[in-house]
Image (cartoon, rainbow, N blue to C red; front, top):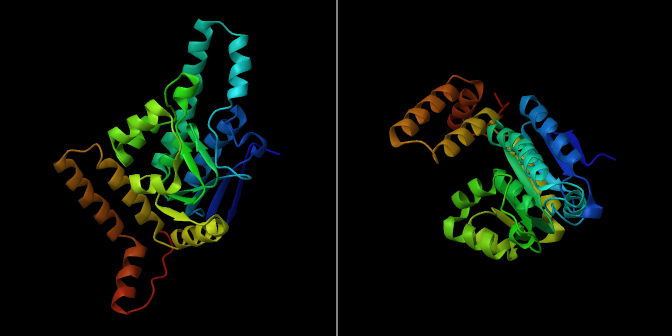
Length: 265
């Protein structure tokens, strides 16, 4: 079986990291497949929501440390630096695709989200986690720094002091703690995680998909734009949405006091 699997049903693409025997640690195959499939769903108009999850009892335990150990034993320092620059830059294409994705991405977190698992969850638009899930950057425990965009997303989601705490101490945090900090949107009992995630993703998949994409663009750009640039982008996004069928449908449904039937366009 592939290290990353995808199913599409009801407008929802579910990406499952599929190495449960290794807590879904990131392999080279998984990284390559995630890059390919993220670009695929980005361009597929039939997909209106994406769910990222781990197979088995955990979301994702970061990089494959056992594989790293074997690699370090057989390579020289100069070779190692170049190889890791290449590996991490390849990982960045996934982050670019997730940020650019014109549809919502939901992280469904069960069990451990460690290292790059935290980074991937933070790169998603919404995070739903079971009560018993835990989050840890953990990079400091193996003697390196965070990667996979956590140094960008975490300070903006939970603040610089909390991010430094996670980076320097490498402690575990519960799903509720991460919700209180601002990374996790919804915390649910483990027995209800599947049903609650299905409900959330179905709601998003039946919404105005293009509007969601514009909304993502608008909010993420606000983290970097100057005031005037952001207001200009607001006007452009609104005007772009206003010419489309979903805006006509939404306005008509409001006036007619009925539920809107959005097509995503």
